[in-house]
Amino acid sequence: VDDPTLPVAVREYTCGDSMRAMDWKVTARRGAPWVRVNASSVAGAVVLLLECETRERDVWDDSPQMLDRLVHTAASLARDLLARGHAVGLIANGVPPGDNARVALAPAAGRGQLNVLLDALARVQSIVIKSLPQLVREHASKAMPFGATVVGVSAVSSDAMLILLAERRAKGVSAVHIHVGDEPLPLRCGGDGFGD
Image 1 (cartoon, rainbow, N blue to C red):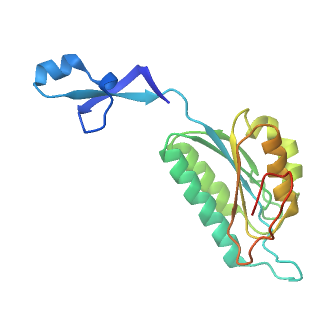
Image 2: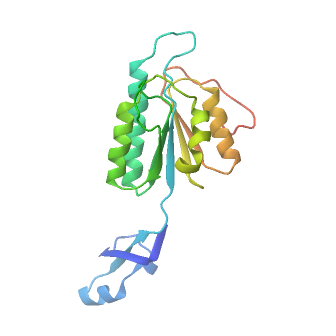
Image 3: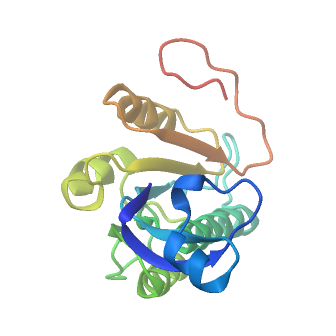
């Protein structure tokens, strides 16, 4: 949301700019129309929920390619969202055994947060220590601020992920599911709000 009380710069007028944004003093000095550029007063928080399970049903082996897709997707989302001024957090349920890497990062903005998120994503493996819903219950108060948009990223069909996102939607939170697997998700109908 542009906040007119937080002007950060002026730029030349382009077709389609609002007349309300005109900076009349600069326009008078320069002899051509100029508009104010305002800072955003509100940038939403986004929490990425990374389901690190990569085994398809009836398959015993983990898929390194699926894990790469998960990590690449989460990293790309984080980079893009941070570039747009959003605060981004992460909850992931796959960490190496014995690793003390944090699986829950509270949303924060800025370039430093990108480095923290990329470091956490680099440690992610398809070894699932706890279920994602359990991690969300444990870390929601710290890592999921009120009003944050939730983006679930998974590679395999997971009823737990869909139920978790449906619960968030029922609480009035924006929730999105990104599936990066090869197998299409089964069509689900009903009150969960998702038609994957």
